[in-house]
Amino acid sequence: MQPGDSFTTVPVSVAVSCAGLAGAVAALTGHRRTLVRPHRDRLTLPVVFNDYMNTLMGDPTTAKLLPLVDAAADAGAEIFCVDAGWYDNDLNWWDSVGEWQPSRTRFPRGIEEVLTRIRDRDMVPGLWLEPEVIGVRSPMADKLPPEAFLQRGGTRLVEHDRYHLDLRHPAAVAHLDEVVDRLVEQLGVGYLKLDYNIDPGTGTDLDADSVGAGLLAHNRAHLGWLDRLHHRHPDLILENCASGGMRMDYALLSRMQLQSTSDQQDYRRYPPIAVTAPMSVLPEQSANWAYPQPDMPDEQLAFTLCTGMLGRLYLSGRLDAMRPDQLRAVRDAVEAYRGIRADLADTVPLWPLGLPAWNDPWLSLALRRQNVTYLGVWRRDDADRSATLRLPHLTGQQVTVELLHPRHLSPWTCTWVPATATLTVTPTRPEPFTARIFRIATDAPTP
Image (tube, rainbow, N blue to C red; front, side, top):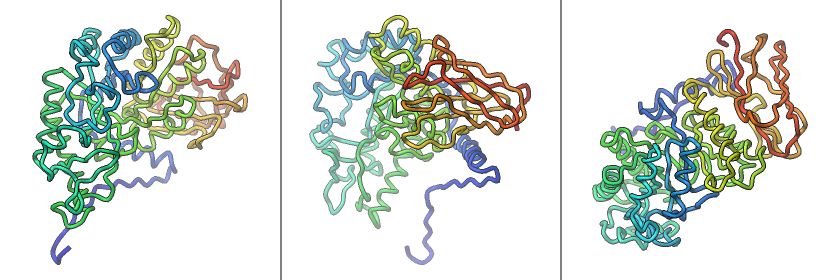
């Protein structure tokens, strides 16, 4: 910098509280809510079904999707997102992405057939998109000028067989605007899952004093593109994915409606992610995968469904292959979630067992507002028979503990001690993986 020059950093938020961790996180939670842009999604928190995780895994076709669409609708989903693969004619699409034109081999009568079925079943159709990358085999790699890509030393950056667009350049912006406008206006897409699976490293030195300055300028141009996108399509819902939570801050989340918290495929390992997510993301933006499968026993089905319920319920799984009683269990979870979601955007998080370690056998997350606390508890393999949870905001109060989900399985014993503000929970049968969602109510608002 030269004498007299100035530089503005990215915004940073700091919370200080005399009420310890819980107070600091509550302050951050309230602050984050002041940052997010108004959107109808925040008022309704619709249930999302996405076809990817442990289901189609990037290989969608009309034949595979239509039964899933019907099953997701029967389960109560309100958005159906077709994930990766819809734009390519085979499974080798990684290094050819960039045009974002629907495949004709995967959808012989056009992807419109699938999107129409989604709308006919009263769901919003969504598509996966990775807008900032162009595969090295993509026709767009030659159609766009070299200056439309991040580069160093006059050479385009290549990361995992992909180029990275530089959104400072008008040709890169025009390309992405054309793609999104076409998907929204011609195909009627109302939801986009925006992924980001490469890392450009230190940045670009094109038209910049340093690679870091170039990368920051691109970053700010990317945020400007998102702002203009919302101005053109104010009802479009945007999910920030980024390899499952790998690029997650409120520069993005002030502009996007929900955040995929992980690409974790093992339902037994997801609870620590879902439980700790509200440290970084608003509960109403935390899209935690719940991927029930037909081969799961009843308690494990409940375990994965509970993982998604204290955030944005984000479903996947082979619902189309389930028995009627299994699909009914999924529908019950959706109905229970619908009963609490209006409160979620007014809650602050608590951790009745403390912040969890990766292998903790018992885990718990509480979301509190006024005189209601929503409590999730997960028991994993080799755990003690019971767990004692601390809820200090309820000290000295009489409470009512109501089981919200699953109601069709054996209830747990819950013992409340007002003087110590402790709730001891004990499963009726100690299954290796089991979970419950409770609603705890008091007669008066808690401090």
